[in-house]
Image 1 (cartoon, rainbow, N blue to C red):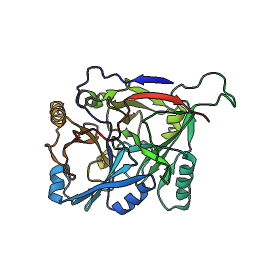
Image 2: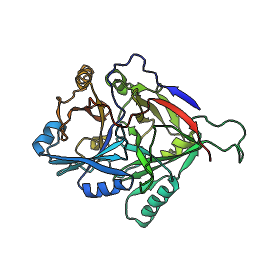
Image 3: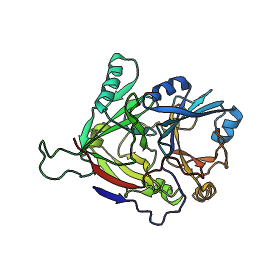
Image 4: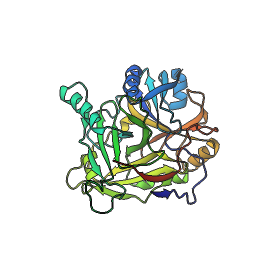
Length: 358
């Protein structure tokens, strides 16, 4: 067993969560709820607001019905909010080339990644939906393997793939030979045997990762490392992001000091990519918004103001939660929600790798 405690350095103590919800805009919440039910998400709350109220909260003049969905008992991170707009502002990013600027991807763990690959590949082959699944690939991402590999000294690996779609973008991963307590919880009754959303990928419209530094200095999130370059020489990113020879991107990850889950990974392509970031605005279809919660909403609002990120005023959202919204210079939109009570499911704050049989 190895462990890696997170270092908070001199970050503001905001009490920030990891990413609480990924939010998807749609005109058809019935289909969205049915789709995500097979991944284990169940509706726990709903609310409707008028076009006037939605304009005040989100800047979108459209009647809104929102549905909050939770996977199993995990209430500290990885939830889903479906935003059913009566009049969406546009079609969103939609089905687009991999690493299209403005794209967002939500990540979850599964017990059977090849079953998921077969489901999406079959859908693609019969032409029912616009889905592009990448073939699952395995790698030792954390350097957990030692000694010579044989039948008895089995490889410790994670296998992952992406599924890009007109409706939603996924990354799935499956672990072999290890687990990380608190990072991905799969309910046995889930039809597709998948977890809550563990982390989130953002292909951003930015020239430098310096544009994301406010995540630490204003929100109190930990930068896991300095910005680095990932490229076609790394077999995982090459397959998942369908990298052509010679292609690479800047990468940086951020995580809450209060939860190892709800991580964010940001990517800036180093080369020409389609830019559809103008369709990533709140009110369009697809993934357009993510939320955090904090017991110190006033403090965070002041910090965001000091960083000249133009937050909305503090007001109640459709669920009656005191909150505010802002969009950063890279086109990423956040809702900060005030929560004073701790989640029932206590999040892990220390990363521990535990070996398993098989």
